[in-house]
Amino acid sequence: MASKGKVGIVGSGFIGRGWAMLFASVGYEVKLFDVESSKIDDALADIKLQLNKLEETGYLRGNLSAAEQFNLISKCETLKECVEGSIHIQECVFENVDLKKKVFKDMDAFASDDVVLCSSTSCFPASSFSEDLVHKSQVIVGHPVNPPYYIPLVEVVPAPWTDPEVVTRTKNLMTDIGQKPVVLNKEVPGFALNRVQYALLNECWRMYRDGIMSVEDIDTAMHEGLGLRYAFLGPLETCHLNADGMLDYCNRYGQGIHKVSETFGPNPRMEGELAEKVHEEICKISPLEKLAERRQWRDARLTALAHMKRLLTDQDKAQ
Image (cartoon, rainbow, N blue to C red; front, side):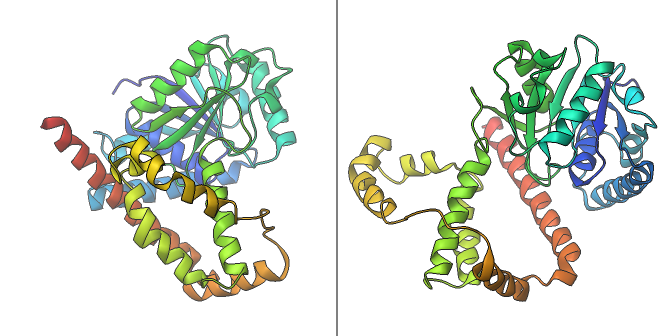
């Protein structure tokens, strides 16, 4: 089986494993590197289990078997081995800007003039760790949603000096592996997904703080209400469909939305006694000792939902 090209993954945690599986699913040769060699062995063992389970349940992505996909993923002993000859590098180290600066500087030393150096960072703009690099025009953010194998969105965020061709290549690659890339035209703190998520979290925190709802009811309002809509439609099209178009929605509800929003007040801090109370309540729903089991439950449902959405999308296209 001919490889579609070599892709390097730097960091073998949950995000790195998800990326490795995604790239292998469509035939890329994946090289996995971590500063702690034993972590790569653990990652490979987990990837093999995940792929086999996905194949058993009928939710394996791509047209290759689990064994074929796993055989495309291998361990690198050095960063040089991981970077050299790759068409794309996906960095997945901890969210620490100084660490990312070091990792990208190290990768820069081995990078060719045409490899894309992509970060999975969820909050740091590429400009914060790439300014002094020789290959800074090849650096970009490709922020996945955790867990990336089960949630297809990828935020593609260039630095001011990123070559436009790198943006196009990254978007095309993400599409090729079955993800849904969205491009931010300029850097903004938190990118798009987390800015929306933080706005939601802030209001949930306020409602709990002010005694309006319990933790359980706040979460229920999302997964039994807005979450069902947003699984298929964004908030803007939701508005558009809930009236006779967006302008009609703005005329009907815009003033009320503004008045309610004016009551939100300063953003709360997620700390101290209030954080402890929220933690206590959420642990009754999802105990700490069962987090791994709950994550598996989450991933299974996300897999089923993603599978159903793909089937429905295929049906729409066939009509």
